Image (cartoon, rainbow, N blue to C red; front, side):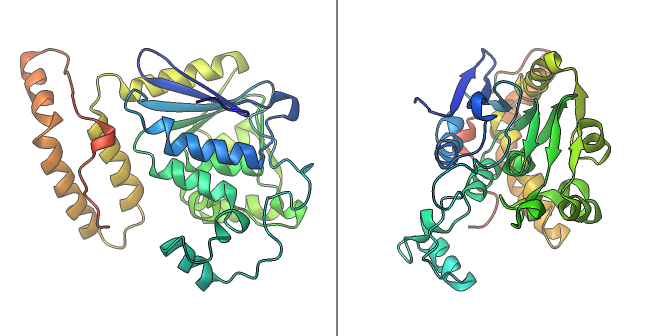
Length: 294
């Protein structure tokens, strides 16, 4: 598939590198980029030859936020709509209800981060430069964030009179804690890479030329010699059960996941361990057993 705003390639280990590719516009997020990112994370990224994904930006920026030079409503929304929480939930339950909400109301960044959240494989952000607004919030759905020393990260919505989006009100407090998330949203400050690391948002800070190789090597460490099924289920267990109301919910999901993995790739893993050889896992992340209701 060809893209206008993205490039994608994979290496021999299945580590894919997705590059936001509008360098002349500092990789500003546009309606086209939103559509392509959603298509990527619900399409190409789900292929079994892709084991993990590193997301970075072309040129000197990661993503400078929404492209504010677009005509009309810069967020691509239909200002004639009169939505309510109830009518939007009706649409989400049945897309044929209020079909105009699909493109005229739903937050484009949120559609992207929900797709990242649902993807059953690791996603790592390699923040190579400015990441502002949606450039920061889209990374909240990724498993880890590495940053260049040149990175600048800003949740600057308050300066524009708008609110944080891309489901970041759910993700960000889980990453840095509620008080720090509130401070960063209220202040709308631009954070340096070290400040973001000290706040728990960024895993590590790297010299600019070392960032992408470090992120790719970390992704490779996650997937080489690992069962794609076990990895995908482990990701689901942590993401879902961290918000579960009781540990019994985790016990139910753990029990089902352990049952299915022990009768699948787990047999090969145990045999390889006993025979002192590298495992040859055959499970596919595209064929996961269901361990959660619905």
